[in-house]
Amino acid sequence: MSGQSPLDLVRSRWVSAPLGLIALGLASLLAFNVGRDVAQVLFSGSQAEARVVPAPAPLAKPVTAPPATAAAPANSAFVVRSILKIDEPIKFGQYFWDESAAKTGPIVVTVDLEARTISVFRDGHEIGAAAILKGYGTKPTPTGVFPISEKDADHVSNIYDAPMPWMLRLTSDGITIHGSKVERGYATNGCIGVPDAFAKRLFGVASLGDKVIITDGKRLAVGQPIIENAAPAPTGPAVLARQD
Image: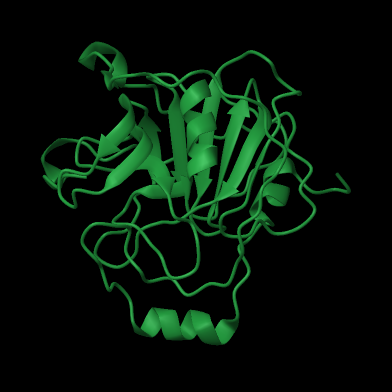
């Protein structure tokens, strides 16, 4: 790895964007459109497919974790053992998936908001990676450690009456991971939008209670627990009663 830690390499997969478009996008934040993810982020990119393996059949109906098992210890150890070989920045709409390094084992999902990427780890080995959409302005994507509390392959937003396929719920106030149109000119209302095909594969391997760790530029060395010192997920009365 030439002296770079696995997550340093993961963070190097930035979605590239012309500086002028970034400045223009920041000057005109948040033009939200009802019925779909919100147009806002002006980064360049293109859609691309990558090697994939078939995912298990989707669940027919939403499944919700029992309250007693929804919580997960914030200091549980998780160590990165390997990452996918991706030699260039991941473009909007592009994803990578290869389960050959780990056929079985616990799943942990990491999201780096600064790099705008998501990674799926099984038994410490990265098996999937993609560019994401995230929330901005008054509806940012929160950071913290979140257990998956619900799975719904055919979820429809309560507020926007918009489809959010292969949904994995992270918070009671509507923050989820879901299939989305991941391309230039789109953002979310705080959720993590991923390409539909990637969302389907993540849905197939993820289980209720699996952890999703959302950070904003956190770097780790090989062998360091990824959840250590991560901010806990927001709970209690401070959470806004916002629906997804």
